[in-house]
Amino acid sequence: MIAKKVLLVGNFGVGKTSLIRRFVLNEFSEEYISTIGVRVSSKVVTYENQEIKLLIWDVAGTSGNEKIPKAYFLGASAAMFVFDVSRKETYLNINHHLASVKELSGLQNITIVGNKKDLLSEEELQTVINTVSVKIDLITSAKENDHVEDAFLKLTAQAIK
Image 1 (cartoon, rainbow, N blue to C red):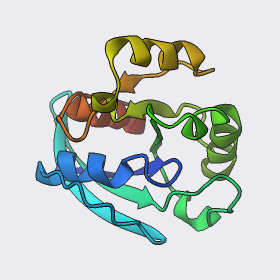
Image 2: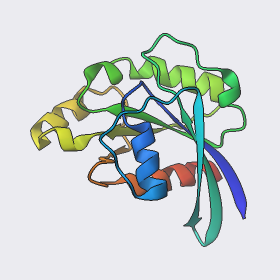
Image 3: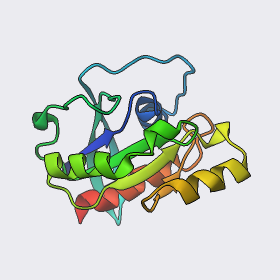
Image 4: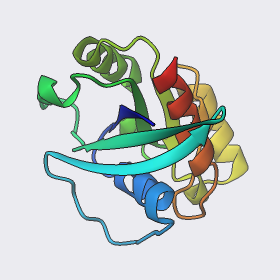
């Protein structure tokens, strides 16, 4: 079995920890508990007939200006940038955030995920999709378990490339 370090990054409160809890434990909680530093979870997934142990690094969210320690990014095989579709400030400067993640991690392809789709109507969601300046890979809802597994499978595919 191979192990791959993958990162979840993005502003505070976008649902990174909720996505991980939904994926690893199939649980969801309305309680917001801020991640301090980094929290590592793991889950074994089967992808293209091989077992891969994902070491999922839940990197504490920022409000944009704080520096994240480079050590968190070392050795990462893939990264998922998560934003909150209901909070404009989490995706307006997405290019700047992605450039920072790419620089720190050395990764060129980052999986882009908009979370909390349960908070918007289809029309509002389409407006967000049209506003975001980069291609969004998936729109998820950790609460409703919508496309969460797909997001992590996409991350797994990135990790083993």
